[in-house]
Image (tube, rainbow, N blue to C red; front, side):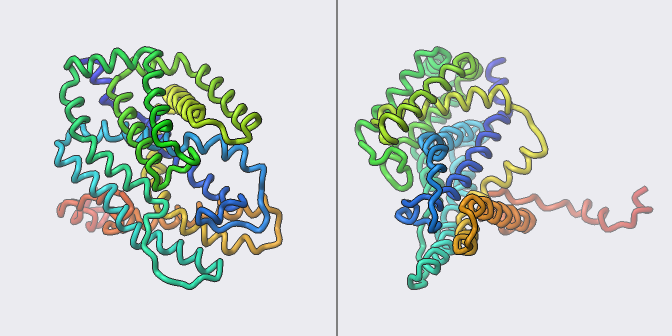
Length: 372
């Protein structure tokens, strides 16, 4: 019972990791505009490449999206605490499916128009999931896995859940997790590993990460204590595999090594996050609410910034800073509007603000001296 109470308390480190992962995604997408291959995947690119950016990008790109899938699975555990199966599906449909559909038909076509304009193509409306493919995947996972997840959640004292908790508190259990991810790449044979968007590799990898993220939180303190003890081992292995990938394999390491490196980075992030980030604060409250709308909106302002900045005869480093600033200002400025307009909030994944009771409204209209 004590362990169950602990894991039912809000995990601020998971909230922080979601915010950080979306921030890294935004920065990564800005950086793609300075890579020669960016236009091939639908980005507006600068005439001048910044090749040095590839080194931090390559470090991030094997774990930044899988991390979000893990965190999403963890979030569903907490969302299930006081909801039935039907209530969970309804709540996730409102928070995930509605923004996905709205974004596919309204938001993504905007940045596709900007892309067509910049490259002198015919301007036409094209609906497309674009960067919001992630939301479609997450909703599918909720629907597909919810029978299993509810069974586990409702039988936390049963033999299966107790076995999961005991197993995931042992270091050797991480080899089982690793085996599942290596099995996925051996079966699917992705090309390349980092191509998650709208691929079967991205779908199956996300499904595994979502499920294991749920199980990690279900396991309670035993799992978190175990990965905290091994945090420096994870960092050492991950960094070693990254250096091997970049300087021995020239960025193209075998998929089983990439899966191993990816998980080691993620375990390290979870371990250090649970130590240093599990605390509330005003910044977290604000950024947690902003993260979802920023994710939905960022490509529009990224492309608008690129159209304005890339023709300028300025150093490529300054171009990067300007595009990033324009993207951030545009996203957070629009978020400030969205959060204040109640009917817009659900379209960007935010909960509706409850209506104020009539009595409260009447009190707010009274002169100050009548309240004293």
